[in-house]
Image (cartoon, rainbow, N blue to C red; front, top):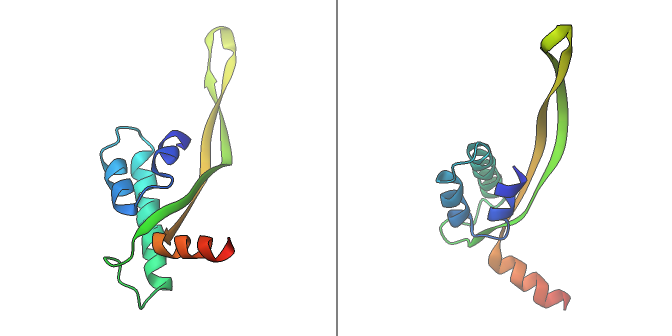
Length: 108
């Protein structure tokens, strides 16, 4: 999942969505759905701004380890091997590119 997250970090939202749509990895549809949710949350917070006018970028993406389900699989000679089914927490921050540039100029 982190490999795909590294690809979209810093990209425009439209380009990131296109990358995720055609990426063959199993984690791509999950990240695509989370990115759409982040864009919807941005729209809800900025009701006056239009999505087409805003130059949205993927500001930060980070993947944290989540809960791990531990299962047992039968092995030869009466043994058992542990199977770890991993999960993760995904955080995506989407922001307007022009706002970020203005903030950087003000802080400098």
